[in-house]
Amino acid sequence: MSTTILVIGLMVFFAHFLSLQFRKTNIPDVLVLMLAGILIGPVLGIVSPEDFGKVGPVIATIALVVILFESGTSLNLGVLGKSLAITVVLTLWCFFLTAIIVTLLGVYLLDLSLLPATMLGVTLAGTSSAVVIPMVSALQLSEKPATVLVLESALTDVLCIVGVFALLQVYTQGGVEPGRLAGGVLAALIFAAAIGVVGGIGWLLVLGKVRDFPNTISSTLAYVFIVYGLTEMLGFSGAIAALALGITLTNFEKFGLASFRNIDKGIVPLNEIDLVFYRESVFLLKTYFFVYLGISIHFGTAHLALTAVAMTALVFAMRLGLARFVYRDAAYSLRDSAITSMLAPKGLAAAVLAGLPLQYGVSGGEIIRDTTYMVVLVSIALCALLVAAYPLPGMMRFYSRALGKPLPSKTPEP
Image (cartoon, rainbow, N blue to C red; front, side, top):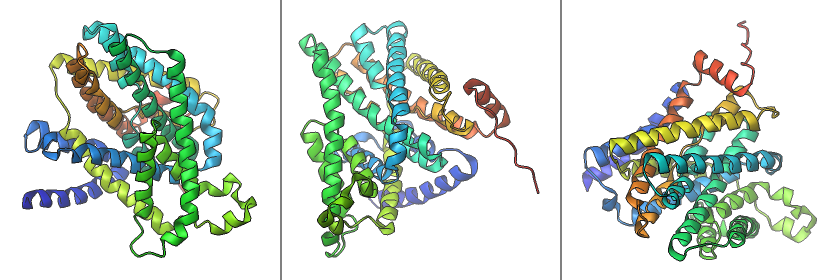
């Protein structure tokens, strides 16, 4: 027990060191943390996911909720509205093209039948909020592309979850109604966002009274968990609700509440101490989440590993071409456009969904699970390597040609 406590303490200081190195070297801390988890988990066998029992998945979900909520508090509603069109185009095209690429490779390289291959494709079609949001924050992207990436990661989580469960319904019941499926996706998004907004306004009205009690700095996060849990119980997306709640708490002026005098007087906004606490919570949860993710990785055969590399490479190449198409008329810099094309890592949603086909007895379920875990590892590694290598002159010239964006002009030395 003493060794475990010692390692937990050292891990936090190690994560602080990695964050500092990220700023200096552009090597993302999330990759190193996951590699540390792989080292103490699958490689050395010191710990395993079973050692955490039910606590591991719970911490992973809490990390995702807090990361989405905190990112919501940093989003500007005006910028969000202007970025919505590009977000929808990038999200839908990238989701469907990724699903098609992975499905085809699953059929031809893994010998999966069409339905299991499609399950694999949909599982890996999204981007990971838990990876993308911390990297967007650390890389200090411009406001609009940062908003697009945050929203994309949240929306694709919903699409992946709904898509996989729909395919499992096809497997168990022999079919699914397209209209009901589309309605389920829209309901999961719209009602979840509405719950988050209403919940955020309600919390602002009582926050002043809550602060009269001692030790309430963490009460807002507890409220976020309540909103997330209730939204999930109602069958909607708790992740979207958490994101919408965070956006509401820092953008409430734009909801027209000033026209209601009684309501306007009762609103107590978040202060800087609250925001610092949320950022610190994200840091701690992110640290343990990526180590746990590394511990949970399943290594398959060499053939699966090579297939995972092929899938990841083709998806990243597709996303690069898609970024050129989506951003060709947008006034985004070369760096913002290039990093948008790089940030396609897979993470928590894919890892959780990967085990469902095996649980349902789908043929090839073990292949789906192991391939997904390998793609999660390879995609995060490739994303990290591309981000770290981008400042090199050769890489910048490559992305300038690939994206049709001019190289940044050099500032003359005084």
